[in-house]
Amino acid sequence: FMVDKGNHRHFMEKEIHEQPEVISHTLAHYVDFANVTVKNFESPIDFARIDRLSISACGTAYLAGLIGKYWFERYARLPVDIDIASEFRYREMPISKNSAAMFVSQSGETADTLASLRYCKNEGVPIASIVNVRDSTIARESNGIFPTLAGPEIGVASTKAFTCQLSIFASLAVRAGLDRGTLTKDQASTLIRELSEVPRLVREASKLEDKIEKIARKLSEVRHVLYLGRDTSYPLAMEGALKLKEISYIHAEGYAAGELKHGPIALIDKHMPVIVIAPYDRIFEKTVSNMQEVAARGGQIILITDEEGASRASLGDIETIIMPKVPEFVTPIVYALPIQLLAYHTAVAMGTDVDQPRNLAKSVTVE
Ligand code: G6P
Image 1: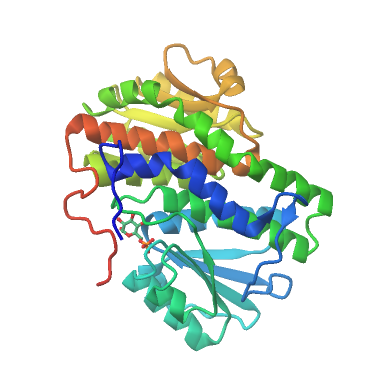
Image 2 (image 1 turned 180 degrees about the vertical axis):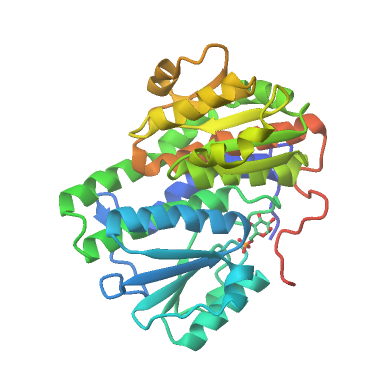
């Protein structure tokens, strides 16, 4: 069927703005908001029975899986191996019988992800996939799927599929935590309540668009950008860098903030903007010291944080994007918004083909 851009300049812009709605749809599939718990949805994976979970995917879907790892390990005490599918498929990883495998793919057709799935199938472990296209090959070959209800995604750079994938991982982590007895009912309810706030928080975050657009205009004049984050903001830093390079062709790297000293600090000078994703949390101060290291070398900092973080950063003259206060659990879903908008507006300022960036394909069905 036909999908059109409505009042938007690009599909990507439309898809960014659809997020509150599609996240809401997706969550409603997995979460029972009335009883503040997870639904008893079908799952080919019995989370109480496994002692390890392996996740593989490509691109943005891989980064969603990386955030899933933090959640499964933290809330369900379930160890997770996460791999880029093109590595996993040839790595000959021994798969234990008490494990399960998950694959993440918007299209459900990515060749390397499919090959990784077949490898695990051959090892005889249960397979579940998070897919946006329900009648895709990956969906068909899995023992069961967790569908994202994002609707068709046309922009080559994934946006709404990503936040829907995250919404599912968050729901699954709570479900796994309950099944494994690592979360009490009360703790699970608190997390579910936080998850239910996401669509509203995402809508609020999108109100920062004018401010982000101004910053993007400046960003469009640079050659290199470094993104930093800790904890779940680290995969998000990589996602920010991926989005920016995909659609604006500016060279960008995403790093764990703690790794700054181990290499990227050598690149810092006044021509190198550093985008720091740092909501105010228990490790905020650690990231502040990384920002001081950047500032001391003349790097320009763009800090994405909340009121509390902005007032505690005290770094003098830096750009700050002030987000609403977001519960720690759901931070990466909500902070995906400024990251996407920054990449989008930078690309628009540069005049690139946002929905069809050069050399990239929406779905990579060949190796
Ligand atoms: C391509 C797209 C990315 C996407 C990746 C994985 O590189 O440009 O946006 O994240 O493929 O695609 P999949 O359909 O498996 O999620």
